[in-house]
Length: 249
Image (tube, rainbow, N blue to C red; front, side, top):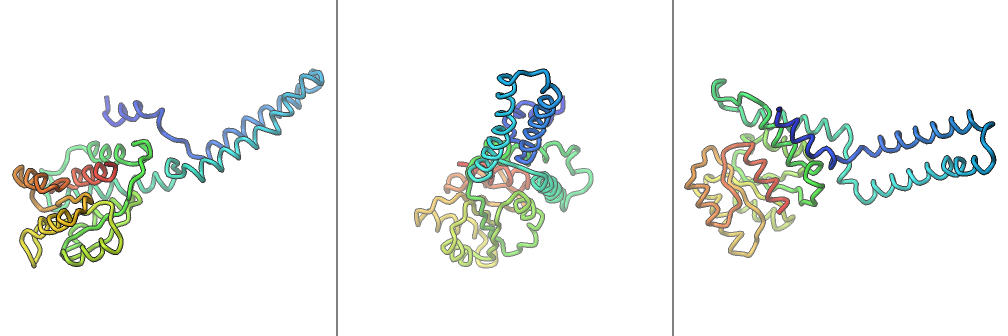
């Protein structure tokens, strides 16, 4: 069975409804009941009509009250057409980031892993976890990560760029990020990513930090974790998964 379809069925009961659809369905039900009441009215006694009249009057009020409550208290758990459009844009961005600089022979044979990464890391499919959806991205060549940044921004993340360790520390001090993504080597230091990580941890700052580089070995992954980092990767899909996990931690 298609893995996306299988997992979608498994979580379908958790998928929140579009609030406008809730209102439309509810009001449609009221119209049906009202129509039956009018058509069958001459066959009903007064005591039989009273509950129907109360229902037709009270039900729309209850629906609208619930709608207002959902929007005001749980807006982050609701979705609409714009969210679907953002989901599509994010999937395209992740696909572009994954295949950039690779030959056709090395590109993914299927987009299913990419789409799965997007679908099952978004708030709609993770129970609407509260997260600080703000990323501080440290890289002296930010254009290299244009697709990746577009991916996160399509899903509602705010991305702030910094070109050096000092600039990153200053921006982080002014507005604390939820997650920090850093490259490794920059003109001032070939291990600038580790230098930034060390500075933050020395100051007691436990903001999740992920190293995103052109290559990532098992030793580098292990070293990053030992330095209290939150991941080391060269893969856009893995980066997305690491950031999503760190933000929900």
